[in-house]
Amino acid sequence: MAGCAVLVTADRRAAELGAALRRRGALVRTAPALSMIPHHDDEQLIAGTRALIAAPPDVVVVTTGIGFRAWIEAADAAGLAGPLTEVLASARIVARGPKAQGAIQAAGLTADWVAESEVSAEIAEALLADGVRGLAIAVQHHGAGADGLDEAFAAAGARVRSLVVYRWGPPPDPAAVVASAQATAAGEVDAVVFTSAPAAAAWLDAADTVGAVPALVERFGSGEVVAAAVGPITARPLLARGITPLVPDRGRLGSLVRALVDHYGGRHVLDTVEGPLQVHRGAAVLDGRVLALSPTSLDVLRLLASRRGAVVPRSEVLAALPGASQDPHAAEVAIARLREAAGSRDLVRTVVKRGYRLQLRDPDPAPAPAADDAPHDLETAP
Image (cartoon, rainbow, N blue to C red; front, top):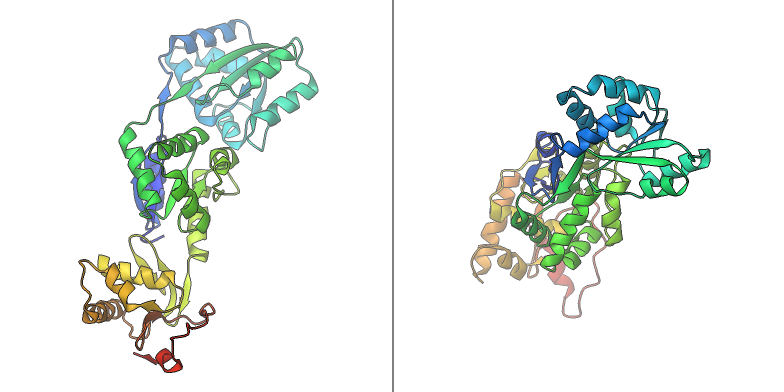
């Protein structure tokens, strides 16, 4: 991922995710779309925990790993961790996905049933099928708030208790979120990473405020920018806007990073005469080497790579250079510097009287020449 500009929209574990991406060579930008507000000192949470200990539930539904861990930590700070763990051990514990299951196991407990889809509706379907009338069910909710479980169980005759261990708050820097959406819409980012559905929705809402969503949908749809979601739940707000994200097989940050690495390792690669070439926002990699390119040379190479072996007119190369020069010599100098930095005169060929093209081993079929393109104009020179 050398030179890939990756935007991280997470607040929680953003440092960990950013570090993992940087180790793979990515250039990481952060713009948390929401903040996470823990309830460690929330009197309501502690009161709910005491009530749960006093009247143990039959079933406990754990919807998030971080929420369950925070609940145990808050109980420990209040001197209630031991009694709470005993109550939980005597109940049937239902987990919404592997992350919740892992947190339960870390507390020395065992989940009796796990919703592998990580969808709350799967929990509701399973418990309602078993019958919940007359049961006491405690539901640990995630930061996005109600997910329909309380209402479904109550309607079926259960006694429901809700515990919200953390909640989502406003972004630490709203202006940075808007700016990140604008930068992505302008093509300054290679990938945007989402780790929660509420944050994905909030980021898109911020983009809406400046009218950037249509451009984002276009860039994500073309593959120029990659949206990456940690799991199917996180992907939903993106799919609702017509954006199909990259989703790893497992809902883990490590799996998300590996999915991005695999994506950029196997795609966005041009097979040039000098080896595989990848061009990202901040760097280019040719045959495993990160090229020492100036920003101008990188812009010219990106322009050539975008045409996948087709001829780029000299006028377009000039337009990619700083300033407003129309001197053909300036384009020749820029191409010469690019060849020198790449260590190859063969990577970029000059097409006499027409422009320049990247030399691919198996270029895409070129469009038929225009009527005014005489056959001798297709002759190439170094």
